Length: 91
Image 1 (tube, rainbow, N blue to C red):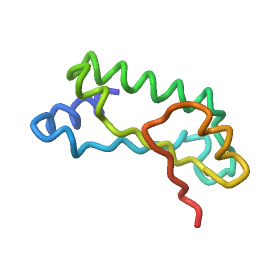
Image 2: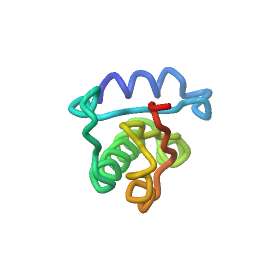
Image 3: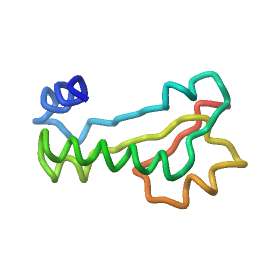
């Protein structure tokens, strides 16, 4: 996550504007969806990294968005965990 660290550090004075959006590379264009546990693990790892690279306060307040094929049929499972946000790249 070195590039993430550079982005977060370069925006340190204005960290409230940082939003991290991700989709697993294996899910892009495949219709495959991460499980809620997989998405939660990525959120936790990302916050842990930001906490050590920048600060715990920035890690806690950074918005992290999972956007890999969230649909009406899988949003209940994905929302079972506490995420910063979810969005659907599908219309």
